[in-house]
Image 1: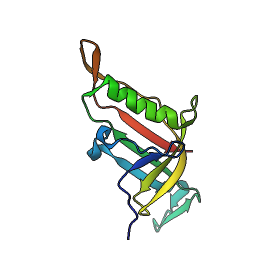
Image 2: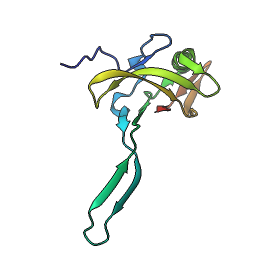
Image 3: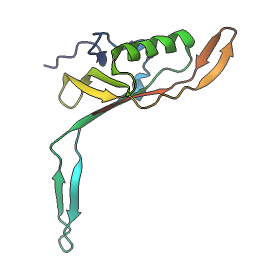
Image 4: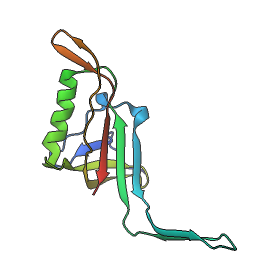
Length: 139
């Protein structure tokens, strides 16, 4: 029986679950335990494939925020991310995520690529943002 506890992503440093109301669930992409080929080739005559796969398996997570989030929502997301960081300069963070490959929670140390912000419109003293991508790449 799977041990799913109702969340996809949690910050290890704070124990805080990433707020689901900000995730566009259909955009969630989890690529746990990726295999990487050190070398691969096909035999010339038989075309048999030979693969030399690295022992290390790294994971990535990526999702989009829901569109039309307001400035306060973006600030809440930013606060969650920054509070969880181990090294702000590197955007290094330890997260616990639902590993769909093994059907369990697992912690990894990763980094976030530079965020991009897209604005839909400005309303008086508020900004309404379009969807943006949040990604975590394991070290």
